[in-house]
Image (cartoon, rainbow, N blue to C red; front, side):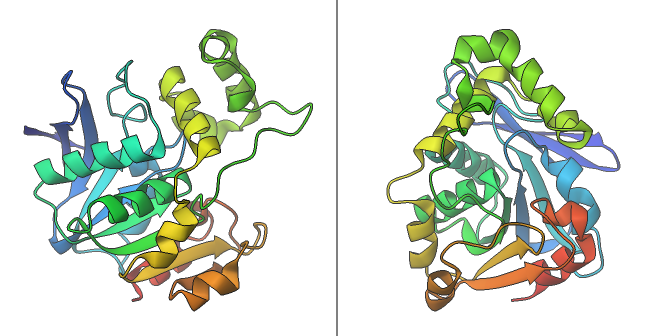
Length: 261
């Protein structure tokens, strides 16, 4: 069932995606088809990361859904959801079905990029093109010895004190949206990224028969396996003056490349 309210001058919508009635929510801008669907990274929130770029001239005028994955942002936090990459993709697909979306251009950042790749593999009817900003393509290694990360804690430890520790480390920008996440959702999602998918999202991306653009920030580490991705037909673009959060660091270049086929 699809429901909508008015929020921030756009429409806020939601859809039931789990048997327990849990809802995914998104901010939607009306416009032409095919729709664009924005998917955030771990601890982020789609409207906060994407609204400013999706309304720039190269991207404006299209129906745009800025979706919060289960456990994050405006969406519900079901306690019995596994929060693996595949689970997020399946729930996202159910939300897009409720929204009447088919053949969308899906724009995914970081973890959201991995979810978008898996969605395209699971549900090719929903995805006509992928635009990826530094997506997670391989299993994420555990924290280095002596370092503290989400997966340094057990789930109980993370809920009790670990999330508070992480929030003090990530800086005010990321913390502003990470604090909206359910501790179990963030913890299980982090372990989902550590486990990866089978086959990996890298392999899935290379085999997809749709247009694929992958953006990397010039201030980030070099993209592993770039030549192999390009040989598989993935359009890889380096965005100047940008790190991992490309849409925040260089929104104009992000919009230009997202609009470019």
